[in-house]
Length: 364
Length: 196
Image (cartoon, rainbow over all chains, first blue to last red; front, side):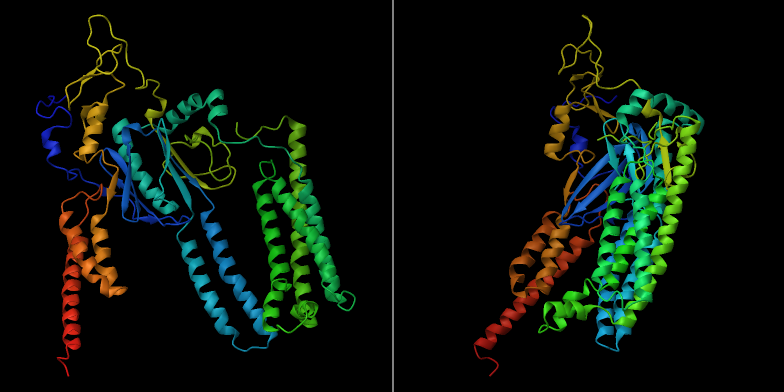
């Protein structure tokens, strides 16, 4: 314990007051990572300050910092997120949708320079998706203390997280002492008792569901594919696409209901993901290839046309319609069959578990 | 908000306790994502710092809590402090008043949490008018030079920060001012008909 200061009774010692420059060294752990918000794009970086972890937040001309002392750190977690997948979806929506629209419009007007359109949109999309994929899986890291759970916003990728958390773990163990996995597991089981597990857990109650909406949606998808197959085989019977709009609307509504229903249920993650895939497929096929969005584009090219003529004119020619209906049928029917197979497999396993004993609820 | 470290952030299922403190990342049993959980002895410490021990009759008491026993002496002002009032900073034991005073006087860099990048402001003032609005160089260049010189020694970050921005701001400020004066002289001569 140092001697109390006598000259300056209302502050630190005079030596510290005369040297405002920081005198301790910092070791950089991450490069500045930009996170986008509504207005600004602040950057975050992590530094090792010897006895604490420093998180810098730079926004414009201001910098703020948060110090997390290693002696206070109770836990460090790194958990997966869907950032990489979501970014790929956004890039695809931003680049592929206008590219398909313009290519389709160019094909309607028998334009020849489609390759340049494909390159103009396709190359940036490919570069962005490739870079995003090569950066590796995305994750979120938190440092937990007694009073806070601080997100390390400078880390969004697993590759960086491994390196940084190795250094942070070594520094914290240097201060607090290591904890072997077996000892940690035993103490965690004791720490996360029934009271703390019920009070501190983030999980919401999970409902048991046999997937009735999923079954109906996949059956509707098979019917949807069947209607398209019929339209491809007998195009003269189904002249107006309005007769295909109705099955599409029914399928879309059922899938939306299934997607809403499947949240916080016992339906397996694989089936939930497959439901999303099927729903996106329906949207892509029906909206992009069926000319629903081409209507305003065609109207722009033919401003003198009547609206109904514009609607008919924006639809693809009969030969193209046969091809599109065939593609829709070829894709929709197997998706529906596989979806039904997944639903019935889940139901069989759920019934078997129910017969063998009470199903353990998730979160315990 | 304090999060439960054993909850997977993607699928919100509870992770088994056997997944903590492993050398490598493990897979979440529900969603398959890579998960790493490391816990430290501080998590299991029951004894907290929020309570000070009550003082007996013959014991020294805390300056701020008369019923609490004094544990340490403040290294800044010499007052007696209980466990609740003791704030340890870089090995020094300080009271909340000394902390607040040090922050107001900016004499404790290890306690600072907000900085302004004056060097970046100076550089922006020096470069931007040269690109966008050259006629404003007579205002922005002196301002840039002032910021660069006035805040040369001001701490502008919690981590060491090089002075190249200040140097560039001075350079572009001088160049901008000199160039503006040359152009002003040229226009003055042209207006006076010296080139006819």
